[in-house]
Image 1 (cartoon, rainbow, N blue to C red):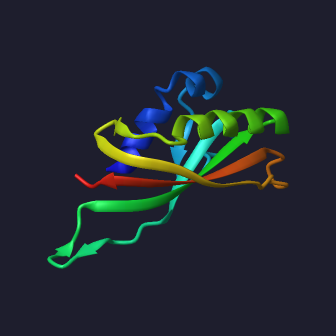
Image 2 (image 1 turned 180 degrees about the vertical axis):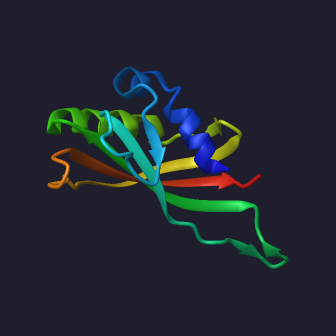
Length: 129
């Protein structure tokens, strides 16, 4: 499962661990989170087909929300995440990644929590196990 491989990668990639330790969550931040931290979720997961049916080839887009207490820290976490994924290929955990492309980045701060958020969208091409 690629989600498990992403968590493993983000919690062992030294530049990210130095900043956020192992604070990586799928779907949403926990209540009263310690930041900086990253939340990620799938935003697109189409099924690829061949003439014989569904293919093991996957092309899935994820959103990565980089949260922090101030804007510069959020920007730095976003930049480290971008460098970790941009052009990545090889094994990520138990998933063989053929390519990873950072496709979009934007600012989406949260007035309710007072936290700063920088967002990346990353497209992964991989073989589903």
